[in-house]
Length: 585
Image 1: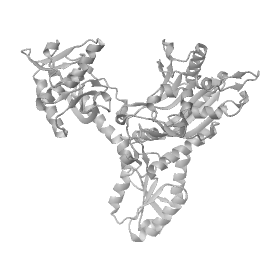
Image 2: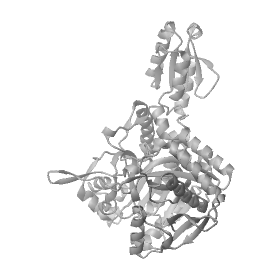
Image 3: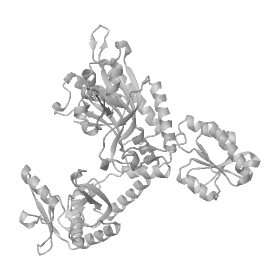
């Protein structure tokens, strides 16, 4: 995995918690009327939420950081103190927390930063976990300002959140800041804008992405690959509506377990239609539409499903987390005694597409039950058999995996393929989940060879997840430098002058008619400016046409990121392009 994601964080939580107290101390000194919210540590540092009387900016952030350093040098001591040291005057958020803790009977503690005369410099309602003295808070940096609703509730006031990070050594801080710089360059939101892949607009709704032409090229190429492999592995493509009647999700159980992630029903005459958050209930309707025999199994259905899931606005993150998405979905109805065989079949499919796409995985997880069996469907024999089957599949494939007890779905165990994003979010790209519940809820059956009715097992298969999320991962891992076959701009033809336009247009049309994604840049701009533009757009090849190329019927090309050019005959270049597409290069 790339270094920017592979660096294992060994954060000193106590150091960062102390730094958050220093931050609050500095803010109150510079902005005395500020009201305080939370100030916890997080995976890569700390933050504190403030209700400022006036908005602050990046210049204020520098002043606050400077004041933190001045306070830290005073070598204040961190001491646990009683409530008599604290005043709730002008601190309504702290008072709200305190009253709630008292009502709940929670243990309440206060901590004070004290000078050598044991005078309180700053006291906070806090659970503890600090270093003893502020002189050891040396290697820190305030990173950014953001908005955050009090207690994460959009009905509450939006506060100002200041993020920071603190490290034991100067070298660790420098390394971390370098990683942040690399992350910014790999952020799919920046790359997506630079390459004109997608956009958002308030008038289209928060979390509803708009695919631009370059984005549709990438998405369509991925979809073509997905459908090709699904066909190879025995799937039957179907289409189901993007809405479902409320009773469908009530029967499936999603209405009870997933209601918070669903949009409000659209009431049409006597129906309550919900924009669907998942497709599995719809596919059970297809299964139940006809009498099934054991000879019909496994029945593999695939769909490019349009889904809608409610996400809080604060959680929306580019293409990674959206409210409207398209999922590469598969559902397999299989006999219980064929689980191992079918799971091996599906695992081969997932591994094949991951090999083609050269995906940089973080790890594979096997999610099982834990000792609290009340959280899971009550079928002991099923759990024993299915957990054993999934483990055997991974072992037979020779894959390394982590067992995660207690993280199985309530309806069955699962295998997940995980990646880390540049924002250090862990997300699932591929999944295989066994479901013994849904076939029973919809009373799905097949006729066995002894003429008895038996419930099939349902396998939920996510091949690459949603196109939105998967493309965000590809952009981050590749820095936008996608392989030739997948690139939205495979080549750009650049004539040096007016007299080269005709030959350039002929080359463009030849490549275009061979279904390559090419551009012809006939703008009245300098060649240097054109080259800079297409470098920013990550065009895979820049094809420059001048006198020599016309005279010799050749093409001079420069690959993205290369400093030198190479000359080819037209047919030679076409053969190179052809092989790259055939080999997914």
